[in-house]
Image (cartoon, rainbow, N blue to C red):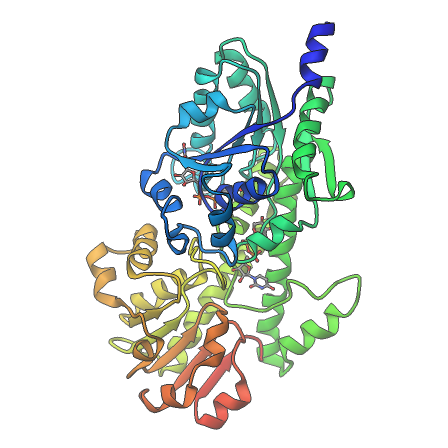
Length: 473
Ligand code: UDX
Ligand code: UDX
């Protein structure tokens, strides 16, 4: 007993491994490595190509675009930050293992279209169980349905080599596009663990890591289930604000009110707050929809149908907002867009990221291709192959048909050349700086701009001659 306690107290972490070198695992581990030079951090991934890119001598080629990330990778990589495909080795050497693999919405079987697919999580747990020869702290970094930690624990305890595992939940709250900033000064760090003495020691080991740069009052510790649920609920609340303001945007269009003015007026109420009130063509990203669907699924599985319906409405409103935008384009262009060139400025789900998962642009493009439009995409960080992959993923039509309707350009002026209309899908800052007179001159007339982000200067656009339409005015 004394010996056992001694061992637990001694858990000072010097070796970490993270499974999953994606948008969450990559940046998070990079910042941990920068802030904790005494800890060896190894990020592993099954995807060899992805790991090769993380190891590219030129940090402009790392697979995740985030402002400021390349410089930190350059500083820490090879010192105490390593990217590798040797998963077993990294697991065995680590005292603490983050699981940061993707948990997409299930596309098959029970819970299809709603529940999280935990296949990769389970594979990781089984791999950790098989490989480990020393005690480990296993940390859920991926966003997971409540009580997943229990499932991981069961697998580890029943298939392992007799070593001890502690499971923690440590959800990541970073937003893409501001990942580095968010990681360097998080609003809070949340760590959930068992209430047993061993659980509390494990929590403390992780607290000690974050305490290298985050002040203690911002590090919250809870039980595992509160932590798991808080992540889903934080995303649900954020998404709900976007759907709320988007619902208001439609009302504004009918009543003559202006959604930007309404957002400002309500946001100055300190109880409401000004953030996340930007009306848009609809939210995207890998998290909001998936996490709300998860919440809906869990609620239904407990028979809480009113709770489930309440949250599902956030998704219904978002789907409506995307569809409404494409319908507006079609109806404004005289109800026919067959063979017309529509330029898309932006494809990523928000600015300052190359991530396109669930981007509104994909769904708007899909609607417009149904109407036989030709879409010319320009996004500063997204290339043609990604655009085609995103459309193919919807399985609306064959790959070749998508390719027949999509082109992409490295130059925004070429994308807009001879276009009937421009749709702004992402709020990249550079769009504001374009020579809009030049774009106007090269377009077919009347020249339409549908600003799905209320990004451009409306007065200026109209003065140039554009038929300029925004969301919510
Ligand atoms: C993912 C989830 O989407 C999110 O819910 C969670 O909060 C964090 O993890 P993200 O990092 O954006 O977010 O996912 P992604 O960019 O797809 O990265 C996951 C990586 O895990 C991929 O590179 C994939 O190759 C890797 N992976 C997946 C493994 O290494 N092993 C597996 O078994 C499965
Ligand atoms: C979100 C959460 O913010 C983050 O805490 C969590 O860890 C992961 O999910 P992310 O999806 O990366 O982060 O970006 P976020 O800034 O939340 O934007 C999500 C979507 O909502 C984007 O498409 C964005 O354009 C849209 N949005 C956001 C709006 O349309 N209006 C707003 O006011 C805010």
